[in-house]
Image (cartoon, rainbow, N blue to C red):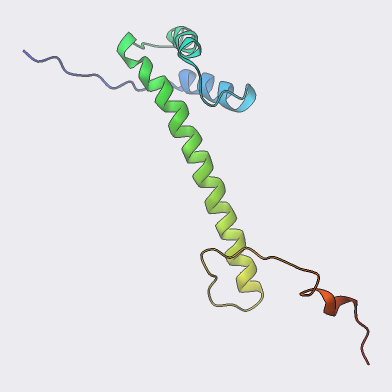
Length: 112
């Protein structure tokens, strides 16, 4: 009989602990030792087997990636709004406004 791998599904309390570590304590890429300590703490709030300790590592890795993506999407939305505000129907993908002294010199000249 083959053994089935059981995927770790964290309880609400375990997620609360993980988020607290991530947001309040700045834990982004925990070391192996930190993962062991985090897993021990999580066991207080629900089952987590030894082989599922890797899921703790992946939780942090995935959460970090999701935060980065959310930030990027938020930035993209702001850029799209700014492009629309100036009447552009679309923005280039690599659009980032760069102002130089020559491009803003018209602001400092007086009208004839």
